Structure formats: structure tokens, C-alpha cells
Length: 479
Image (cartoon, rainbow, N blue to C red; front, side, top):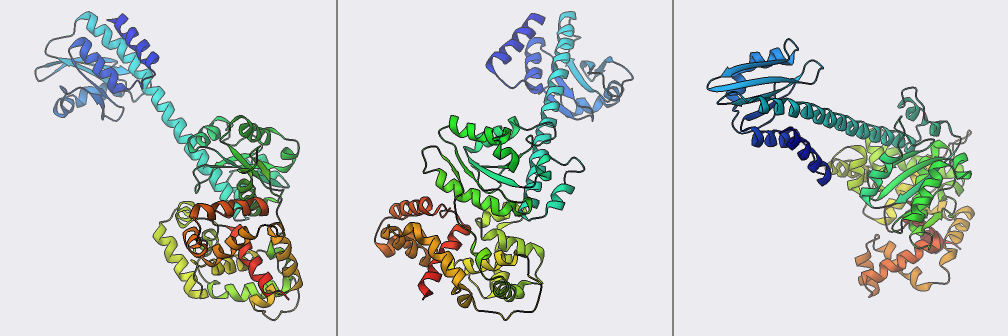
């Protein structure tokens, strides 16, 4: 019988089957003809065959307690018409108990087999417990990395450092950071994040975070000095793209930690371009943000006046509004841990307060610009009169920005025509196709061409679309 136990273990290993306590209990039942149960450290039945009823286990309560708390190693007793053998599993108190019961006492050979099987059961249970602990650790480490990333996205570097409980990762000591955004199959990003995780839950001097919105995105934060030297994480993700034809990589330019959100947006733009390049890797080559080139005092005066109606709104409302301009509403719900209905409720409050319809591309772009301008440190000095948005967008700085932004499109009239129609259709490709009398596939193909020419991401919500809306609005009103 012992040889049969060893043969069975080899068979499980060869087949790659999951060796569970229940499978071992069922096998032991077939070998001995007895009824088998494993009772865990808290007195709960973990695995059993049908012959051991809850009433039988309850009748053994006192005996099980004696074995579990270490007073005895094994006990032979009776429960009704059954001969019962209870044996401790493992040494650490409290202990699980193997219960073997039958109409007659076990033979010596069957008793020895049960004891040997008990040793295997103990090992299997400890391995499964270790796997559970490892799984929980991986889950907690991933949540911890995501929390750090979200704090950086909110420009709260101090909060990100506090989250590390004194063990500050090298990333948070860096002067500047690049975001490497890797597109890969969803199942691969779990494996990659776990494989290259160090003992502290980070990834060397960098950080890998599974995007909670897009299932095929793995966000990699790399300190700028490591990126320049093509260090460990930077080299790793580049090699992954080289070795896996289905992978694509977008890389931002360096940013201070507090500007991680801007770096992430750039990486998204670069990723949209990377999919169209032979090497499937692109570094952001875009333009300056419109919010950064507008005259500061008038821009801040306009943004302050625009956002004043939601100035007293809860922080969550502001977070929802900001994220909804960059991600689908379902993604905002996942990022903030709230329901989609709650997201919609907060956005409705913003729309009512500001007089906007956030389903419209022009209104989304206006709110995005106000929020982006509001992130620029205000100048010290006198109060500036509040200009209109049209007045702000007809300044020399805005006109120069818009013309430079649209310049790569000058030689492709079909793409420009499609982009204009797409903006007026509130970025609905199907409506755009109907207006232009072309297929939806053609609309998307032209949008991809525009992504390549502009170096921006247009097919998912975000700042690329907002910039395009403003650029057309500016040049249409320019002298």
C-alpha cells in the first residue's frame, strides 16, 4: 500500500494535477475502505468522504480537541457503530486531525498507510497555505504599488513616500522619472509583474503597475538616470518588446515625480504611435501643452472663474471629473473604487454647476483646459481681469501653438476633413462615417494616420483629443 501511495504521488506530479486534501482523502478511502475526514485547526471539516456525517464529527468533538491542542498525538475510540482513529497532522499547535473510521478496526497495513498519507496531507496543506500566503502577498504588493502610482498621479509625492512605511523605494528618491507603457496580453502582465518583483514588492529601482483601466497595459515607472543608462527595468521592457512580436512600448520624456500624470499621458501618446512602427517602440515627440503656453495671468483668471462653481465640491467630485476626461467612466469607477452610477452622479453635479455637457467634445476640452491651467503655479501680484475662452484662444501664443500642432496634417486633406467631422460628432466614429459617407473602418484608419502624424493618442479618451479640439477652434478664429 505504501508503494501505491508513492505511485499515486508520482502520477499526480507527472500529470501536473493539483494535489488537494480532498483528492488524497478520496484515494485513501478507496485503498482502505474506511471513511476519512480532515478536520482543521478550528474544528471545521476541510475534506471528507460521504460516510462521515456531521453528527459523527460532532460526537468526536472532545477527542478532536485533545489531539488538536497537543495533549495526545493519536487516539483510538468509538463513535456509535464506528471504530475511529484520530491522528494529529503536523507538530504546530493547534493541529489539524486525520479521522479514519470503519465498522471494524483498521488492519496494521491500512493503519500504516493512513499514517503515511497523514504526513503527505500535512505537507500538502502547508504548501497550499504557503501558496495562499504568497498569493495574498502578491495581491497586497500590487495594491501597494498601485496606491503609490495613484498618489504620484495626483502629484502627492509626500503621500507616496508615507505609504512606503519607512522603506522608501529608490524611485521615490529620483529627481525625474519616465513612464514606460507596455502593451501586452493581459495574462502576460500578471506574470511579468510577479516575475520581476523583488523581496520588497518593487522592481529594483523602478515600479511595475498593472493598469486598472486597460487590461493590456503594464505601467513601468523608471528613474531617469536608469533610463539614460538603459538600466535594469528600462532594458527589460525594451527586450520584452524585441522578443515578443505582440508587444508595444510607449515612453515619455523625463518629468519630476510630481508630474507623473503628464508623463503617463505622454507614454499613452507614444504607445499609440508605437503600434505603427516596425520596432513597436516610440518615445514621445509631441508638443508643449496648451495650458503651458497660454499667457499665465489671463489663463489663471479664466480657469479660476470657470472652476469656481465647483470650488466647494467634495474632493471626490474633483477626482471623478479629472479622471473622466482621461478614461472611460467604467475605468474611473475601478480607479476610485466606486460604482459607475456614483461616477455618473458626480459628473452630473459638475455639468449642472458649470453648465457643460461632458458628452460633447468641446465641453470636455474646455473643462480639461481649465483643470490643466489650474495646475500651473499662480503668479504673485495683482488680480487680472477674467477673459473669455475665445479671447484667451486668440492670443498670439495660442495661435502659434495651434498652427504648430496641426502642421503635420497639412498634406493630408482627407485626414483633416475626417478629424474635423469626428470632433463635431463628439468623437463618435459611427456618426462621423455617416456624415462623410464612408465606412467606420475608414474613419478609424484615418484616425490612426493622424495619431502617427501628430504623435498623439486619439482612439481612447484623453488629452490628445482635447488638444485637437482646441487647435481647430483656434485656427478657425485666428486672423
